[in-house]
Length: 385
Image 1 (cartoon, rainbow, N blue to C red):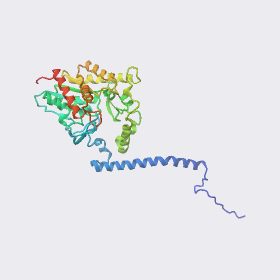
Image 2: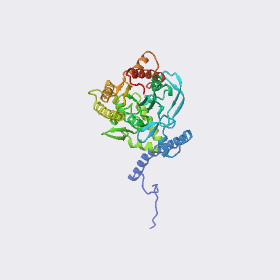
Image 3: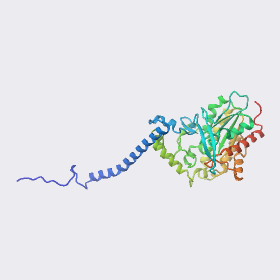
Image 4: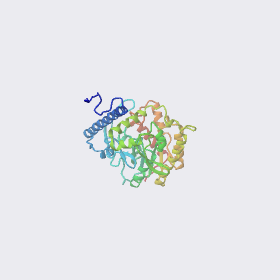
């Protein structure tokens, strides 16, 4: 008998269609295809962004240079200890906008240590060390039109002013501690913001949708300085992106900005007595008090004057009341109504805010500077050296 070999329409693998192995391969391919597509999208985006950085900033294609020059051409740069700092030798000359769209020319500069204003350390005039956050960095005002430039002009002082956007009280203390012996101030002018309580607490900042920049910063937590990324999710991804994936970092920061647009719910509105975030606020109040205790010890007998900005919604009265109590506890003279003086002028029709609608333009700085100078003069805070 002659045997004839028969061939079927089976795949070369010998596995008929419809078998379990074939189904598994199909499922695997179906799942793999979207992942490959996303990976290719990220790779193309990463290469495109790196070539753009090379063309725009002459920034190397390698990762090591990216982290230290992430904000090249911007007033802030990353820092391993501070989280970020004012960019050294930063300079801007160009047009700024007020909140009503009015244009004005401005020259903004920071010295080799990031100071907006650095007086003469050999002068016999009284020296004032001004410390704060974005209101003191004052990138919407020319060098000679910031609030402390107005104070300098009115009171004939040597002024040393350092501010960095988004700073909390601990970062500000670290700046004070670093430059205190160099400046040897006769008076410290401390600019509080109502959002300091959020920025001083990793728990509150993690829960915030309007005061969370997604950056690592130092916190005084459990009585120790700890660097923490205050995000409830994607921490490892964010740290990876910051180190290795510029495209990923850009996408994450854009998502953070979208999340902060008119949030329906955020921790800042829930810290009232009986509110769901009140206990976190009380913890932050204690931490802020401990930070300001360090400030007082570093200053010693030197007088500290302070003022508060950012009062009102979305912050309840507990924020300002907390800063009043902390100031009283550490013999810090809190200047009244500096922020409200600007608000009063605005109610009268004065345009005192920059394009973002929050920070002062040069008019707002002039109003605040005059109010501060008058308060210091009335308090007889400064005499002859």
